[in-house]
Amino acid sequence: MPISPRSFPQPSQTSGLTRRAWLAGAGATVVSLVWSDRAQAYTVQISPDNPQQGDTLAVIIRPEQPQASAAPVVTVNNRQYPAFPLPDGRFQALIPTTPLDTPGRLVIQVNGSEPTRNLAVGLRQRRFPTQRITLSPQQRDLGTQHEFDRVAAFKQRVTPERLWRGSMVRPNGGQVRSPYGVRRYYNGVFAQDYYHRGVDYAASTGSPVRSPAAGHIALVGRVAEGFELHGNTIGIDHGQGVLSIMIHLSRIDVQEGQRVEAGQVIGAVGSTGASTGPHLHWGLYVHGLSVDPEPWRQRGFD
Image (cartoon, rainbow, N blue to C red; front, side, top):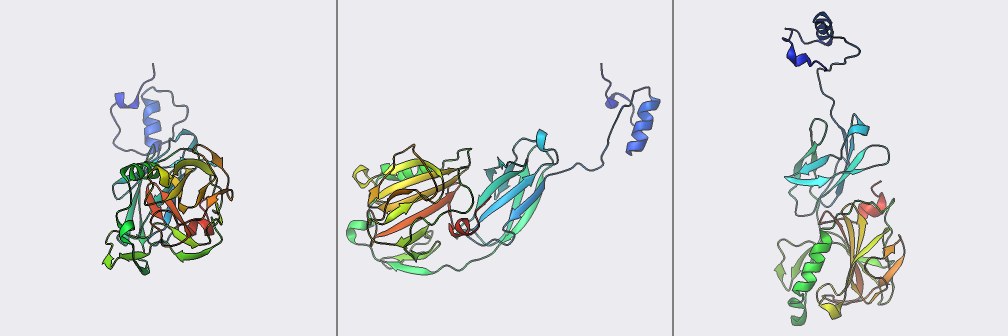
C-alpha cells in the first residue's frame, strides 16, 4: 500500500531537496519526485490584442499538460464560452463583442484542469454611422411568433464540429449599402437598443447568394410560412457557435440539413419581408450575438 507523505510529520522547510531527504530518512523509497513551488497555468493568447466594438476575440489556450487536459471554459462578464480543441493540442474560444458593449476593460477568465488564468484586454469604442429608415404602415408590425421563435432557436445553436476554414467568402458581389453596426431612426424615432446586425449588399433581384463558408443548413424560412419580417431566410451553421443568416431572399435553393461548401450558391437576392429594395442581408452570429463579418472575411479565425 503506498504511503502518503501526509501521514508523516511535515518538515519545517519546504524545498524539494529537504522533502526528498526527509522522506528518504523516514524510510520511504524515493524513485523520482519533482516538486514545484508554483503550479503551471495555461498559456493564453488573445487576438486581436487591440479589439474594437463588434470584433470577435479569439482566445487561444495552450495547456501545460495537453494530453491530460479537458477543454477549459472562458468566462467574460459572467457569461461562459466553450473552448474547442485545435489540432496541435491547444484550445480556442470565440468571444463576441457588439456596438452595445461598453468600451473599456474586459476581464477574461480561463478555468479548467489547470490553475485559473485571469487576463484583461481593452475594448475600444468605435463610431458607427446613423441612418434614417421610413417604413410603410404595412411594414411596421411585421413578424410572427413562429418566425421569431425559429430565428431565436437558430441563433443559440452551438455544434462541436468546426466546418469553416480560413477567410470567409463574400456572399454577393453587390455594393455594400449598409455596413455592420449602423444605428437607425425608424420613422423619425431613434432605436435605442438597435444596431444593424449584418451587412447589406445592394444587388438586382435574382443575383446569386453564396454560402460564406462550409456548413449545414439549419434554418429555412419562407414568407408563406410566416416569415413576414425576415422574408425568405436561410440559416447556416458553420460549427462551434458560428452562424450565418441570409434574409430578404427571392429564391431558396437548399433544404434544411443539407451540407454546403464555401462559395456554393444557396439562393438569390430579393426584397421579401421588411425591405425597402432588393438586397442581401448577411448576418454573422457568434454564440448568439451579431458580430462584424468583415474581420472574418479579411483574416478568418484559424
